[in-house]
Amino acid sequence: MLDANMQTQLKQYLANLREPIELVASLDDSEKSQQTRALLAEIAELHDDVSAQFDGTHDRKPSFIIRRASDANKWVRFAGLPMGHEFTSLVLALLWAGGHPPKVDADLIEQVRALEGDFEFEMFFSLSCHNCPDVVQALTLMAFENPRITATLIEGGTFQDEVEDRGVLAVPATFLNGESFYNGKMELAEILSKLDSGADAKAAEKLSAKDPFEVLIIGGGPAGSASAVYTARKGFRTGIAAERFGGQLQDTLGIENLPGTSYTEGPKLSDNLKAQVRENEIDLMDLALATQLKPAGQPGGMHEVTFANGAVLKARSLILSTGARWRNLGVPGEAEYRNKGVAYCPHCDGPLFKGKRIAVIGGGNSGVEAAIDLAKIVGHVTLVEFDTKLRADEVLQRKLRSLSNVEIITNGQTTEITGDGSRTNGLIVKDRESGTEQTIELEGVFIQIGLVPNTEWLKETGLELSKYGEIIIDQHGATNLPGIYAAGDATTVPDKQIVVAMGEGAKAGLGAFDYLIRNEPVEDIAQAA
Image 1 (cartoon, rainbow, N blue to C red):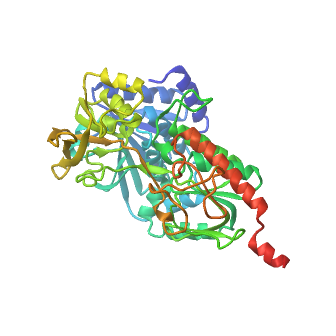
Image 2: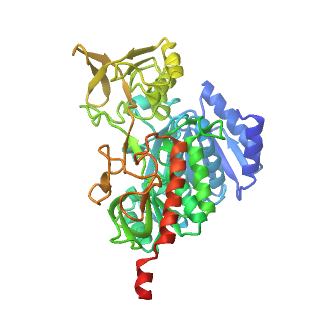
Image 3: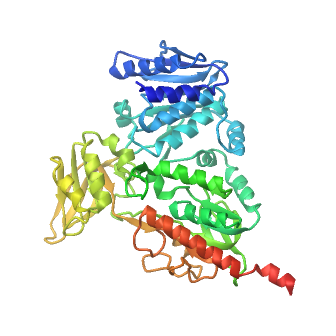
C-alpha cells in the first residue's frame, strides 16, 4: 500500500511515539478490506510500539480504530482507507494516539477537555476533498483529548449506500449524535464555538485585550499575507485578522501559473504563507470576521475594527484584503438545495456524484475546468453558459469538446433549480434567443460563475467602493481614507490572480509603511504640544 518513500517518512514520524498504540480492524472479504489489512500490517511493521489486530466486529467494514494501549476510551475510527488528502490525517492520528503533543493553541486544547456531555461525531469525506482534512483532524484531536468524544471518519466512496441513505451530497459532512451538525469546512475553534456557548465571549475578550497595532490587515489570503510580511520586516507591529486564513486558496486545488513554482496546491501554499507569517512574528488572529469599521478622524489617529464576536481591535493603519467568495446564481432552488445537490467545489464534492448526471453553470476557465474534471467521474455533464460562446481559454475548450459525455449549451439562462424537497433533480434553462425553456434531469449542479467581493460591511464607512462593491484604490494601494489601504480580489484591480494579489499586497504594505513614517501618532503629537 505504501511506496518506499512513504514508508521511510512514516517510520520517521512514528519515532515520535511516546507510548504504544493499537490498530483494531473490522474486515470482510472485499478488496478494500484486503487493502486495509495490508496498510495496517505495513504500519505495524514500522515501529515496535504499534500493534495491529484484525478481529474487530464493527458493522462498518472495512474500518479500523486507532487507540492508546493505555487508555481504550480514547480512540478514533477510520471507515475506508484514509489515503489521498487524508494520509496526513492518518499520520497525525497515529502520533496523537501515541502521546505526541499536537501543535494547537493550548487554550483550545483546554476547551476541548472541559467540554461536558457525550459527543458522537460521524464525518463523511472524499479522498479528493482538500477541505476535509481540517475537519477530520479537528475531530480526531478532540477524540484523543476528551474520552466523552468519539469520531468516526467515513470515506464516502467506500460507503456509497450510506451516503445515499443519509442524503450526503457535499463533503465535508458532519453528524453529531446521529443528527446533521454542519456541512462544510470547520476548524477546531469553529467546532468549539458551536459546542461551547462561552467560546465566542472568551475569544472576544482575548482579542480586545491586545494592544493597538501599527498595521492591522483584515484578511489572510495571498494579498494579506504579503502585506503583513512587508510591514513586519519594516519593523512595525503587525497583525492579521482573518475569517479564514488562506481565503480562496483553501478552495483551490492545482496551481500551475505561479512564477517559480511549476505546481502547487492551494492548501499547501496557504500553509507555506502561514509559516512565513509566523516566522516574521506577525500576530495571526484566525476565525475573526470583521463586521464594522470606524475610520480614524484624522491622519495619525486610530482606526477601530469590530468583529462578529464583539471584539474590537485598533490600529494606526489598516490594509483591507478581505477577498471574494463564489457568486450565487440567485435563482429559485439554489439556496434550498445547497449541499443537497447544489455545490460550488467540484474537487470536494465531485466523487459523491459518481456515475450521475450533473450540470456545470459557467463557461469561463473555472467552469470549463470543473466540467473537464467532473467528466472523469460522473456519468454526464451539461455545461450551461449565459453568453453566446464559452469564455475559457481555447486549450480548455478543445479539451472539453473532445469529451464524449459532455454537452455544451450556450446562450442559456438558468432560471430555476428543481428538487423533490430533499435533493436536486433538475435544472430549467431558457434559450436567450428563442425564449423557449427546457428541463434537464440531473442530480447535481456545480455553480462556477465568478466571484463577489467581501465588502458589504464597508458600505457605511465613507470608504469609496465601485458599483460592483470593489474597494477603489490608487497606484499605491491607498483608499480615499487616510491610513487605510486595500489589496487583492476585494479591490478594483482587474485581474483576480494569486500572483497579482501577492504583488498588490506587497504594494499596499509599502504604502502603509510610507504613511506611518510620514504621520506621527495623534497622541504623540498631543503630548509634544
